[in-house]
Image (cartoon, rainbow, N blue to C red; front, side, top):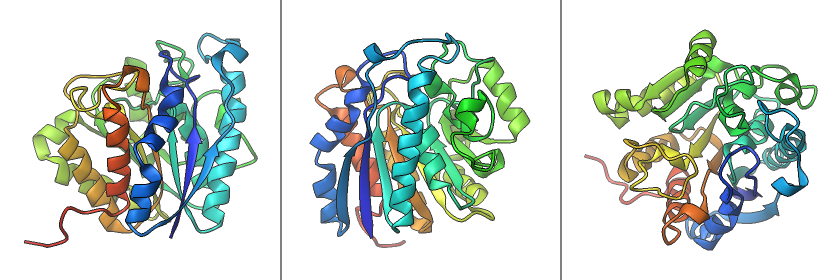
Length: 301
């Protein structure tokens, strides 16, 4: 199988600058070489064109930089769709989580897709519920057909792009009040850190996989590094204490890989400015490798 690496150096969806350098930091951590060592053919497609913030204007404080995020989303969607139509596996590296408006959309073209969203946040706000106006906090809601029409429908695709009942969020622990109402109304599965602590990671991830693969044509993984506890992943723009351990995150990726149903993946929100010796970027590479089948040992009890 060929893996297409697609960089999206965007920080327009977030408040804190620096996450646009995430793709470079991830590449610097030997992503391509390590994937090739697993036996994959790897093609680095370079970066999707993204304007810098200084070239964009905030025309709506509840939808910051929307005029620049829309064309970025179209370009990302096209790159991912092209990769999948060629029978390849798109590995999208970011960049803030607004890139998933395009990546998941591209992966879902002509297929019914399930999505696992590993994140400290649900990213299920709209312009009406957002406390910040940052679009990276709206990505999943947009994919589910909620929010500004110009973001919800970029092309002539069927809306919603993803059925909210075919999504499972894992690791959530920072949800806004209006966002919670949106999630309940949509019927989206949320496996918060409370469920992880109470039932354990194996049970949580197995339930999530069962949920998103039921009557779907494949599974997409969107992995936000702020899902981890900041002690493990300091280089993120919106850190939230009491998150996943490094081992819990690897276990989630191992269980997802075992299904054989993963068709694409995002790794997002790596911010080198806030990182310590590229620690978070290195973790991003390690989680991608695990989701793509790397194992410590293939034996069974």
